[in-house]
Length: 60
Image (cartoon, rainbow, N blue to C red; front, side, top):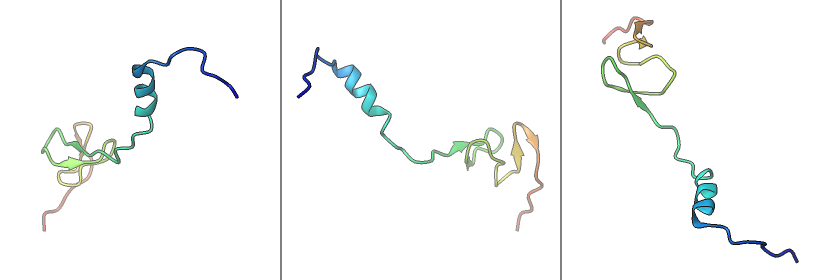
């Protein structure tokens, strides 16, 4: 059986295991209105993207 050649530090183990930790989709805040939106997408409440008005939103 293969044996470990040297000790693996706690930092190495923890940084390797951190890559497997899935946190799900994290919503970002819109800089214009402050509403929660997904990153790299148009804000559903105000219709802006990268500081420009892209979609006209009608309030119903």
